[in-house]
Image 1: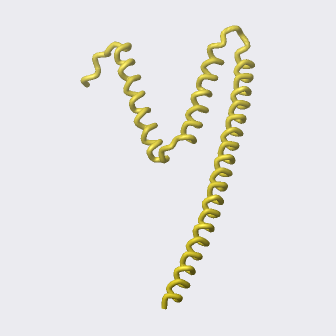
Image 2: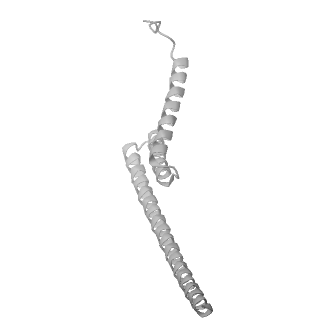
Image 3: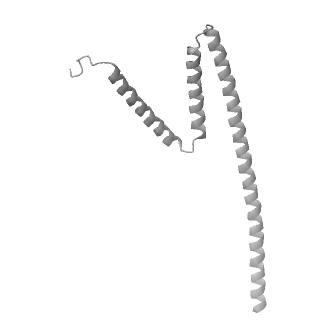
Length: 133
């Protein structure tokens, strides 16, 4: 009886060691896959940044051609707008929140900004006297 219990214990221990050894291989394999995934994502983001930079440069060249005079105001406005668009796009891509949470935050910010604009406009533009009609 003692011999059977010893053999059973040895078999269980061997199976446990074999299982742990395979688990280590699986964990190592998973770590390698995650690292490759991060590398690929980093490459995609870098490529996106390079393409965006080229597009912005092309946009700047076009703006320069459209407005060749010394006044660069329109070019600066276009470049600023393009920078905001690229930054917002990258921010959405890199955001840790889910898409629904991100959209809700954007919606809230747009409403907040709209409220600020309305407040400023109402302070600048005098009332016409027709508000109560």
